Length: 307
Ligand SMILES: [Zn+2]
Image 1: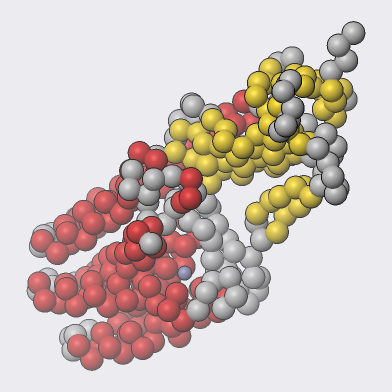
Image 2 (image 1 turned 180 degrees about the vertical axis):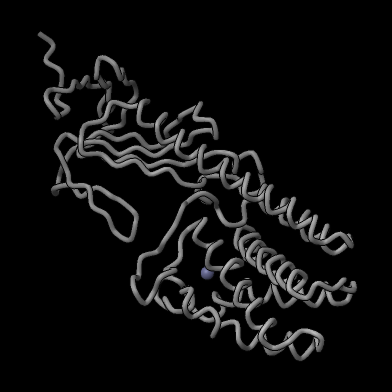
């Protein structure tokens, strides 16, 4: 629930900042305190509006860039009505940008959105950020307060935009680096799939900001399934799921998420020790007192021959 609140709040803040920035730049006029509050309010509404119209995983049009001007139209009309010095075209265009940046593109930095619908239904996503990330949210709050309290609005926006871009670039580089570290930390057989994504809600304390400063990862290969955490700089690669299957399964993808399809009664065990260089694994099967040793022969994990 808290995460949902943070998620919605962050959409509203990006929308609010986009609308107030674009109107301030186009209008070239010092905004009053009241006008700033009105723009922040309507920009916030634009930032959450697509979710009020429908879910991105089936009402694709609500999260498509080409439909944004239509979605923004009613809010544009309201802004024009309340702020009479803003022309209708400016109010409409700036609100369209608030929908695009505050919701669609921001969704794409996180869990994804079908941005190019009706050309494709693909949920386009960078998986850089869990939307509602308290670190990014703090940044947004500082930007919003700076806008409301300062008269040097353009200068504030430039600094804020640079900080936001640096933050997201750092996340991108960190994610790429962690993918390399995770790949090197385990003995894997081809084909395999590694996904690194922002920390999953159910695996962390939402209220602990340090939990957010790490990555989650999933690894699927034909005989192994791993889930775990790694820090932002790729150290402390740690698993909480580490399974080995006696027989090969098939790696299957559905809507950008992977899983492994196994034949009916394939035995599985929990990896307790792993030697990446020697390609050896010690594995513990539920209900059995002794751990089994496995080695890699060709591209298959087989029980080690003791002789
Ligand atoms: Zn959405």
